[in-house]
Amino acid sequence: MKKILLLTLFILFAFLAGKFYYISGDDGTYIAIARSMHLGEYAAINIPEELPQIQYPPLYPLLIYPFAELIPSNLGVIRLWNAILSLLAVVAITAIAIRRDPALGAVAALPFILNPLFGEYATSIMPEPLFVALCYAVVLRIAIADENANSRIDLFIPAGILAAILLKPAALPLFLTAIFWFAIKKRWRQFAYTSLIVILGTLPWLLWQSSHGSDYIRSHIFQRDIYDPSKGSISFFEIIYTRIPYNALRYIGRIFADVMLPPFFRSILPRSSLFIFKIAGSVGLFLLFIFGFYKKVRKKSIEVEDIFLFFMGLQYLIHPVFADRYLFTLLPTLTGYTLLAISNSKHRAAAAIIWSAILLLGSIMSIETAIPKEEAAYIETIEWLKENSKEGDLVIARKPTAVWFYTNRKAKGYPASSNWLDWDTRARFIIRDAFVIGVPASRLYVDPVVNDTSLFSPVFVSGILHEVKVYEKRY
Image: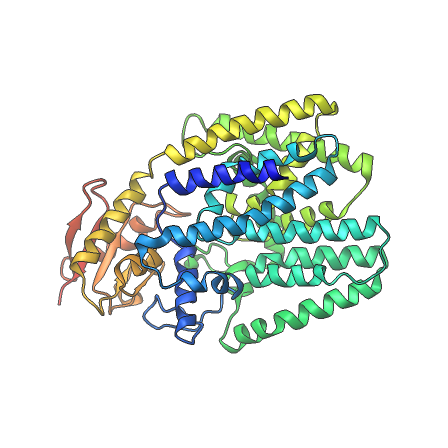
């Protein structure tokens, strides 16, 4: 374990020292929540209305609370703190890898630790690695207690589940895994204690959400396209026969390769002539994983980790967004089962080392790769706004938390509408970016608004990408 931790420290130091990092989304939201706690609130202080925050649970903002007031130039302190917390994931993943594959031992954990996604998330301001740590620590604890025929109540299990839920709502499958396993094993006392502690522990957060009008199921899960609300909602049966197959095809044909071998496939876009190779690579890796899963189940039958894989995977198939960030949660299982496709332990160890070496190269590439032009141009506009806006100005932008964090100006996203009256007409500035996330929103919604010269005029054009601009409202 010491050698694994030393290797992890080396990797994390390299990402902290060499990887360019810029607040851009959820990381800024977590900082905003933590800063609101300093004001005695739990609110989205980065938007003009400063509404109570109901989407993000409180554990991660509490963890970064001591560092929330740091200025942008001191972001490294929060990133270092997150990297330290991420070491917990290494301990949990190594322990479960040794249990899953005693012949390989800690070597089976290397494809997770050396994966560039781990280095990127561990040195960002995001809860993903800590979430992985909690999930797999609970899974491991359930498995060990079951193998030892331990009838005593293990309070770590409900405490770990509760912490995971208060870190990310995506921990619901972890809770389902535990109670399902206890039910089929007829461990009713542990079932009752786990259910009671988790339900009572999450109740204050659920009441907070309910009292402030949260409706995540309808506003997210049942949205046909969260990037385009104009497309309306989707029915339960449509989720089953439309969304689940749609997401499955994209996870198997695209995202799997991005998660298992980053960043080699990351830059290959669907319209590229090389995309067929990405599909082939992704499907091939998935088939290896399925074969390893089959061999593992045939040898050891269904275990707790398999139940966790099922429930967590089902959640991601139901969710309206598919991304490598979600599949990262299951990366320890995906890598471990893929290695199990190789029967000979010596060949499996060699494959793990070769795979890890390739991922180490990927980590170096991730650190050295320049940020995309779209991102650089967006940062350029934010720097301009920092110098040319004044207190009280409202900015409408694709990534409003970045605007708020670096300019100290309130900001909000734009709606899926090309009618200015549907926007927040109090806005003084609008950033027209070059991102395509789901739909080409800038072309569909921003251009028709800002091209009305009676309302807006361009005041800044990016020197990196000319289509990235800042527009100012005429008074």
